[in-house]
Amino acid sequence: MAKTRYIFDALLLLLFVLANVPQINLPFHEWVSVVFIIPFIAHLLLHWNWIKTVPQRFMQSFTAEVRFNVIFDSCIYLLMIFVIGSGFLASEVLLPLFSDFEAQPFWSEVHHQYSNLLMVAVGIHLGMHWKWIKQQTKIVLGKA
Amino acid sequence: MLRLKLLLENWPVRTMVLLVFSSVVMAAFYTLEFTDWADEVNRLAQGTQAAADGESRSPPPILLFVLPFVKQAVFIIVPASITVGILALLRRRRTKHQ
Image 1 (spheres, rainbow over the protein chains, first blue to last red):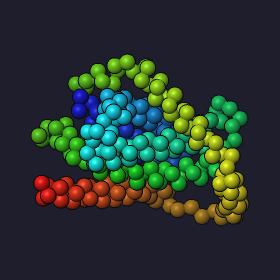
Image 2 (image 1 turned 180 degrees about the vertical axis):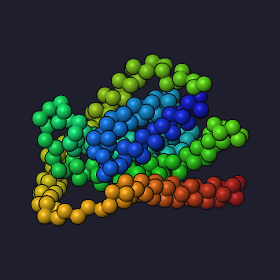
Image 3 (image 1 turned 60 degrees about the horizontal axis):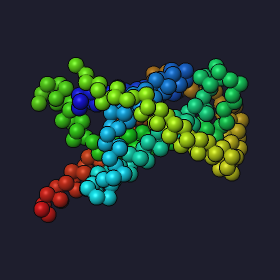
């Protein structure tokens, strides 16, 4: 199961990197961002059983490090929703295909600023799970 | 061979729960559009756009392609390295105290 998580997480990271280059091509950025939602949902579904236990175990059996992780992961989830949502509201290519929607500069501004913050948060998230990433990389590459 | 049992088990319901919850969260964020903060940002952005319309400088295409990736590498790798360092220090301290 860890291998499945690893492969989906690698795909998620790859799409995150590709989605974060709107300067290169805006339609590509918007379409990749939509595709990104699929592995993002898969990422949450693959950790569903753990997420379900959080409310029960938060105060009783979690260490301080795991507790910090839970709070940080909740923040990164909210930030991700905000960046994805503001991206839809700032859309210049996708949304106009379906409606006469006119993006407000506010959404474009906050989308840009908070996506920078999201990159830093993803960095911290990767750092928090670095031990697992290193271990799984060795297993997947057959070096363990 | 990928084991997808954990992913596919009851996935429509779980996905629906995630989508509904995320939509509610986004709907709450959407109310920001009606705040003074949004008005201020919209006003400033229009001013910046008017000023930028007069300029036509753009960086060389190769830089336009490379710089976003460099920025991402810095924004992701630096915080990740700092986190790994802090965690290693904390774990070492914890082992020393035990």
